[in-house]
Length: 97
Image (tube, rainbow, N blue to C red; front, side, top):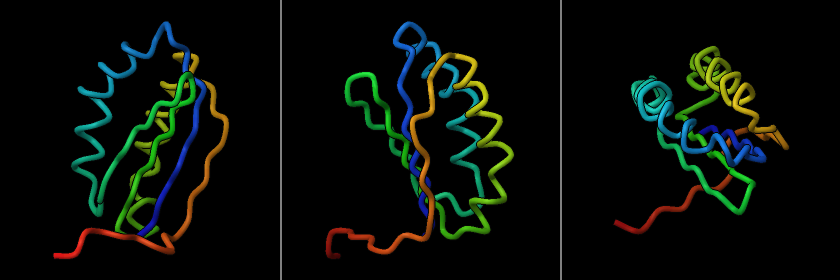
């Protein structure tokens, strides 16, 4: 698996607007992405952490133009990037089956 983690300080005045737009534009696109495993958005006050998991780097890279178009919109909403990390997932735990 390949994971991308992006942290942004949110412009609170536009959080709801961004979430509504994500529901109609970004979420359907990422869910349809080849190799998509999961997306998680975790707020901690004004800091929002987005975690995106793909089957592998090649599939993440294939989605990157769509991802960058979405993050440009987040920039326009005033949600400031604090950090971005990405790489092969070293440990992934799931409940025993």
